[in-house]
Length: 111
Picture 1 (cartoon, rainbow, N blue to C red):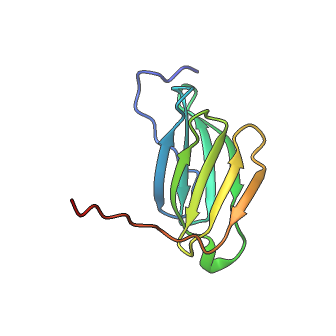
Picture 2 (tube, rainbow, N blue to C red):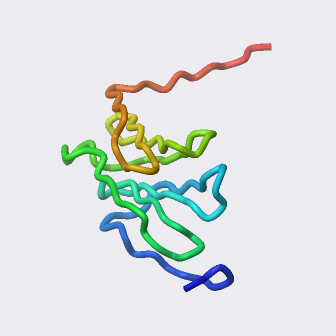
């Protein structure tokens, strides 16, 4: 079923959605991250869940803050409330890397 010109709702997270990102190479591919600790990847053209991936099993680290595709569209980056950065392979859903205790660097220009 092609749902390109109709409004659809997706109910695949058990927690509130905190981030959504579209693929830079496939206009119909997008992902979401939520308080349930999952990153979901969807086809917007078919209104279909392609995969759902749990980032971590630790209850405090489960909350996803943001998701982004890499510029080549092959990976998804997801951050959690406890400063974890996870890198997922879009095609397989495999967690390639996970970095804990990531810190934000703020650069301030003074000129």
